[in-house]
Figure 1 (cartoon, rainbow, N blue to C red):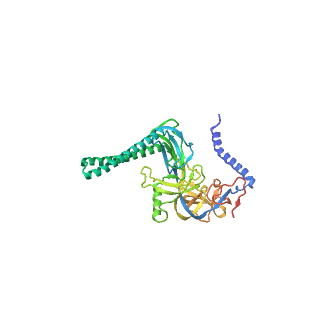
Figure 2 (tube, rainbow, N blue to C red):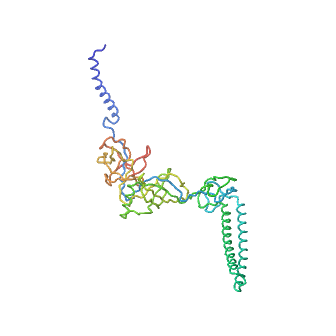
Figure 3 (cartoon, helix red, strand yellow):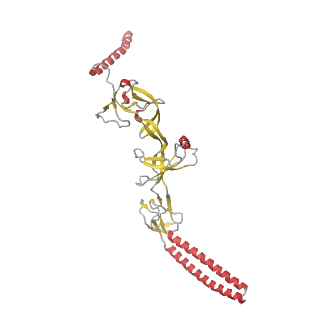
Length: 395
């Protein structure tokens, strides 16, 4: 059994052995560099961009068609023909379906015959009334017979008008057997095939949605709405027709532009937002109703701002900061107050000077403020340099 004093001695000796081992490793690691401190790390620096910009606020939205119609049968009958190709674009008034027109053609012929009969009755009543007017002057007929003749003529004229209305209705019903697109747009699938019965004003045949332009609906929050209203009252922002930029889920940036043409008249108390709508041209048919869209709305007038690459911004609990190149090429920390994004760069509201050089790459090699670095200057917002690519040294 080992003596207790030996165990106590070994435990006290272990930390000293460990420190000596680590020191030897450090000397061996530093030996290739001449036994001194390791060289300063390579970093990329970029001068703060200072220029006039406009603030854009970002929202999410949905694409919607300006016109959307559910096409229904307006007369009852059996589908005789489908005259369109599903998914194609159609013009306003283009033929879509044909419902069996034969019963309605017969009804039209019957209404025309009834009108002819009514007109013949009018001619007879007019002749009889004309004779009655001559006879009443000579006293050859009674006043009662004369009144009856006049009433017969009035009834015959009313029968003509009723027959004309019935003929117009029959013509309209015959026209309704040809179902035409009420708007220009893209037609959906045929929901009723040949030979099926379509019920008037009930059976849905297909749908048509307009294509160009489109609406994009989005919901600014209450604080944003109040800020916009305040700017409009000061004359620093238009009250309507504000420009927007739109991008779809697979787009880089916001390649499409439009204008706001509607803002709702009340805030939704459940969400604290207000509904707004933009009109966006769609000549290439990129937008399809229902798509998710990213929307940027011009949030302010033009102002001068300092811009940095968003990758240069670091977080320390609730504070944001960047490293800038200080005297003797040392990394100096500066706390900053940030704004929104403009042209891919972050707005810095305070904390920087226009001539500061911000460290934008190699930040993981800086372990404490004041650490020496080896800078290479790059343009602000430039993509990271490829491995092995030559860097431009800062002067």
